Length: 155
Image (cartoon, rainbow, N blue to C red):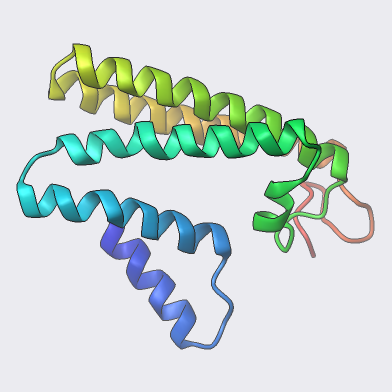
């Protein structure tokens, strides 16, 4: 999956299109944990990546929410045309989700087997996807009319 994401980003860059910042940053950060996993053969590095990355995203997003700085808008502003209030709300929601994920990942990683962690990883990924889809409710309600479609996606 990481190779596929890296390949897609490379293809987009080679075709002369601007690579989405969030996709580029997250791919590089994941690679920083996948490479040691492959080199050492120890899956602990990959398991630890969820704690570090989710925890880092949580701190950054919750800080941007507290400072009333719409950081998510910098990452996704070209995709969504929603109000600053919506960006503020999304920062709190995603920051809280990432905090819960970081804490729960670390708990599962330390106290349970790799098999249980794999099931947790699958379920948490499905949960993230469902949570993300639910956020379209907010973007639909707080979209900027004339600049977005009914879901808040920029036209």
